[in-house]
Image (cartoon, rainbow over all chains, first blue to last red):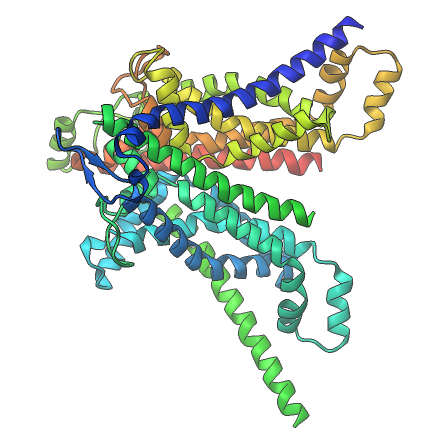
Length: 283
Length: 288
């Protein structure tokens, strides 16, 4: 009988490890960010200064928050028609056919490509094409980074909406067909309304994923510590500024980068929680 | 009039269908283009030397380039570092992850289990660069006093952990309750039920989850930049900076003389990730 108690204690203990890790993460990020917030107060979030010169150090996170939001929104908008089409292809038009199997496999492969390989491809293949099309700044900038980000989040958005669309009951669709509806009408009047919240949740989750992508964005966004003034402007995201500036960071700069990490943690946490909440409500 | 309306409806339907097909093809174009790029540019550098030797320094690479030869050397330090850190991360994450997964399965609906599940979900969404910061704060500064393989492994293991927890719980949920009850009815102690019944029955599912989580961390670059940093020699000391394949790709990318090596390194990395993916899919297919 005693072994049962020990087993239960071991199980409980390991779950406490996860809670400790998560709690410790928040604690360490907050602790590391304190010097930055002490120095700049809440202006840190709303200031667009980034001056690492010794003696005149001044750091603000606004350019990076703005850069992150703009790239993620643009990426989401680019990936939306693509991943929605792919999920319709998989779960409606060619459901359970060989073609759908191949397409599904390819989309899954997209998720397996490391971020840095996307970055290389964007740098050496996509960027020259965009330069030919007349993009300024040597092809670097928000737009280039967003295209690559869009490709990176396609598999997540696709597989989630695919799953949700597949769950729409056949009776509903058959009812509409028997009334003479075309496939398009079934999609717009039956499938989308009944799968709407799940599809939205899928896009919210991939939106959150786009926030944290580092390497590919770092290689393509142009790394300028400014608030981007347009789609083709250069900029920096929260993740890319940490990757870029971390090497030589000490003292106040390090603390500012950790503070940006904390903000990134909070923003992605909130977005993911909203997405998961919607999915849970549906199930 | 009626037939005219029907015509428009069918036309709309057909236009939409074509759009879906065109967009779907556009969606899979990048993967084909990327694989084409990696294979066509990378294959010529792949050889035994590439796996067994460490990279040349910039000067050697420049000489080889100006003579029109292939760049000598390989990425042995990266391969060794990647394996070393991935194994260490697995040693940390697999036991904790599997046991926590079992805990969640055994305590469905209880407050502590729900809390753990939600926290684990949140952990899964944390950007990898933040995990790098965490490992820097926890290990690099206080423990190893410098960039180290241990710090890299810790950041990777935090990344693996929630994935393993999730897949373990989902796998166990699919095991019929009756099997477990039969064992309990025979008076088998609880730990033996777990080790001899639950784990073996769900083994292929657990393995799939673990392999997938490993394939996800193999290509991680950002957290390693803040923790393991990279090293030009093969290193198996947990307290010393260590290289990894993605870190080497990053170094080659930043060194104009070494650029030729990025494609072959990426090809190798992709091959590792994809073969793990395919193996785990095979396991799923076989058990179904």
